[in-house]
Length: 430
Image (cartoon, rainbow, N blue to C red):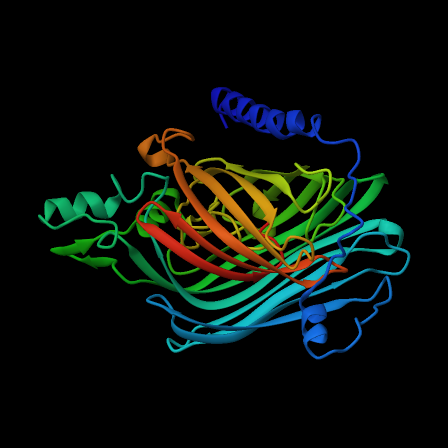
C-alpha cells in the first residue's frame, strides 16, 4: 500500500473507533433491572399454554436451535435444508461458546455446507474461532468497486454492441466449487485480551464463467477473466494458503447476544510463495463491534455498531478471494444485498442497529432497525475507498428461543440500491 493510501485508511479507522468509544463513556454506570419483569423464552410460552411449570435448566446447560431452510431464488432454484446453533459453556468458563452451521441442497444440484465455531476453553484461557465451508455453487458477480457494474468490462462491451446496461443485464453469473478452512486460536494475555495465530485456506475449483466468450469475432470478456489475466492468475481454478496472526480484545458480556461491551480484532494474513501461492501477498483485517445501553431498566434496549475493514494490495489475490460483502465469518454483512454483490482489493463496511423490546415485560419479542454502508475499491479504474458508498437499511423481528444463552431467532428484511433481501437466522447479526 502507498503511504497516502495507508494514511487514509488509518484516518478512517480512527474516526470509526472514536464514535463508539465516545458513546461508551455516556453509558449508564449500572443497569437497574426491572425486578417486576422476568425474562421468558418461547419454551416458557408453550409450557404456559400447556399448563406445565417452567423448565429449570442448570447454569451451564447448553441450548440447541434447529431451523428448517426452505426458499427459492434465481441463483439456486428451490432449496431445502437445515440450519442450527448450539450454545454452551465449557467447564469453569464464564462465557458462552457456540457452534453454528447449515446443510442445504437446491434443485440446481447445488450443495452448501457451513460450520462455524467460536469457543472459549476452560477458564476462558484460549479462544478458538473457525469458518469451514464447502459449496457446489453458482453466484453472479458485477465487477470490482461499489460503482460496479457501471464502468466495468461488460458495461463497455455492451455499449459497443448497443445493448442496455442495466444491473441485471450486466450480472456475470459463475459456477464453481468453493472450499474454505479458516481456524485460529488465541491465548489470553490479560482479561479480555487474546493474542493468536491460525491458518486460512480458500480454494475455487471448476470455475465456469458463463458469459465469457473467447472466440475471435465473438469475444466477451468478464471482470473475473480480465482481472485474473491482467494479474497473472489462472481463471479456472486457484487458491490462497495463508498464515494468520491477530490480537483480540473482547469485553462483551455475551457474544451470542451482547448487552454491553465491545469486541476489537486486528489481524494480518500472509500468503507466501513457499506455501504454494503464485505471489506473496498480505491482507490487514480490522473489526469492531460495540454495544451501548439506552435504558436503565431493560438491558436489551440498546444501540450497537459494527465496522469491518479488509485491505490488500492490487493484484495480491485472485478475483473471487478478494474482500467481498457477506464473506465475513458468519456471512451477515451488507443486509439488503446478495452475497458478493460488492468486491474490491480494499473494502470497508459499517452498520448501526437499534435493538428494542416489543413485549412489555416478558422479553420474548424484540425488534431491530438497522442502516449500513459499504465501500469497495477498484485499482484498475483508480476507484478508491469512499469515492462510492452503497447504503442499505432494514427492519427485523427477534424471538427469544433460549433465555439462558440469550439466543434469538432473527427475521430481517433489508433494502439496498435496486436490491432487497430476507434473512432468517439463529442469534443476532453481530
